Image (tube, rainbow over all chains, first blue to last red; front, side):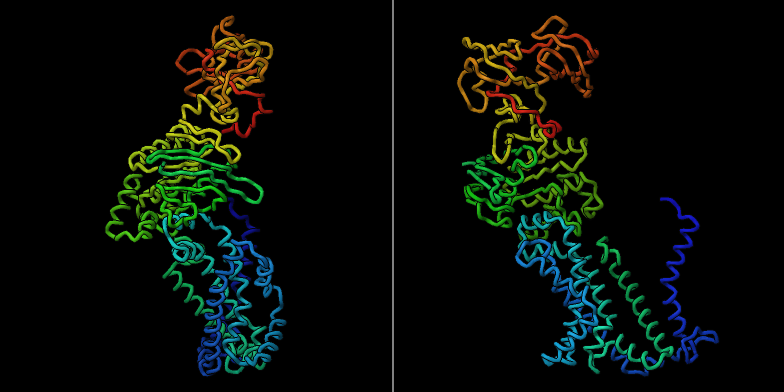
Length: 264
Length: 373
């Protein structure tokens, strides 16, 4: 491999800075003692973190978002595994239609989906239901899971399954002991992306959350439309902190490579 | 009744006959190879024995039991796949142990048998490794251990050595045969490599366009190919088109491009079962293996010739000799004597008994893709 020249090095540095700077700045701003979004020039303060915990609605929304993301990601994966296997491996009428249908939420703007879901929820009397909110989020995250799973399954050597089958394993055993472990990187990667997408989702959720099911992004958006103070930065810093800790733990316990790339 | 019997099995995909009326009996402990070019139906045949492909018509019998419609996971056969198909997320030990686990063999016995199988393929020290940490040859041996540890009635090998480099392939051929003899498992191997099929099989089944064209011992197939296709597919050969001029008693005179050649008139009985003596005026193709041609001094032998190309093959020299019949291939052993020079005038000789006769005209041009094998 050739070394990077000075121009390339400067370019790479700028790209990395551009990606990291907002995160660093938001974390710094969270520690400001001032009342405005500003860098802490006169000492550090935890007052905005304290403020977050004096807003029980924020804490409640955090839990809402966490449960919503956990449920919708898990259920989406549970549905997407058999769906991707069917679409990748079998020819059946409506196969292409199903494939397109599962992908369509990627193309439809979330705003449109939000309005549509709002109408649907009103029609079926599901307004304010957490279960229906989970279902709506599953619609949005399923395409990501499907894409990753289809890629994982397409590169799969079927003779590995045949080998297990010929040794006397039942179809269920082959799936549990061979297929699932082998597509695990697709499953976990899909689940992670689904989780993040659901946790982040704002546009559609604005339409379909009720006071008791308001998610964290929606709560932050509503708060930010009224006042912009460093508490937003503190919430963001907390989310970043939790994510970093979660990723480090995951890497420690399982190894990220193993989960996402399939290497030991 | 034989141990493994295929009776008239046919596999049809739409209107295409992948395998037509294949009938084969394999005795217990025998090593049989299905040999043929890609697309000849050999792999489909193997997959029907394994149970991965449904039989369109005909039946398969194992040890007197009809297994034609039995599911693959109830047949209990050991299979080595071309890609080895090891379980990438399991260690070598767990790979080999899997089949025993499925048979609900008690854990202590399982351990003993896995260790025994790994010992047999010289991989005992690698039990804790993962497949990706092994070389190609080692993976191949894990696949073999995994297939024989379940003590299958029949071992199926699908191009088991084709992913190995030449040197290793040769070593594994002997090892495979050695292991098969030790274990005594009835084995059916699919291969497109005639050297591989010949060196390790008791019998070779040559397949061509979905049909079996010859079943015989390797030596018989090489020396008495039933069709012109086989004589070209199996080793190198000189094919010479000619016409029978006269038949007298045991001998017939064949004109090859105007050059008269004496052959055994009963030779036709050998070929493709189309028995009977040759008749005058019949179109034939003579087939002489390069190593059966003798290169003599100029002016001697049956035909004059001139060395036009010379290839060194290590243990042998391969010469192209131009003469009245076109270019002939001749192989002489590298016995330490000086090789012939290019452009050297030579005589070409052979004994009548080495000439094989195929009735009918020669097929158009030899398929270069087949020659490559």
